[in-house]
Length: 142
Image (cartoon, rainbow, N blue to C red; front, side):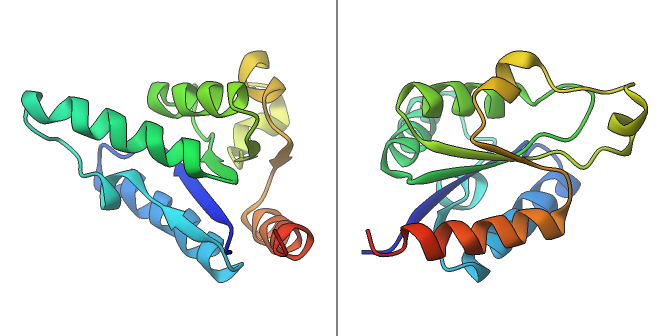
């Protein structure tokens, strides 16, 4: 049985979707099967389709072994924050990526409630890629 990753990231413009797709590619490169919300549930749906998107994303978090989250920016995306909180309540393994260069000067920090739910915080893309490979090596026999 392969391990399953939920990719949590903002997705409302091309740059955000591109970056989420990089997270997805790194997770797949590490050997994880993935769920990427804008690919697998769709985005910008009609209002009557929103309950289906919500259910699809929620169910994917339920199935996930690990949540991989982009935490860059001044604040964490609200949808990503919900996915992390829900995943934490469900006992999911959660890894965040926070590469914002403003963190070094203390201008931008993670909210304590976001950081508190993480099993690991990566501060570079290379660190995340290595962490995911190690996670798969340690949990792949599941």
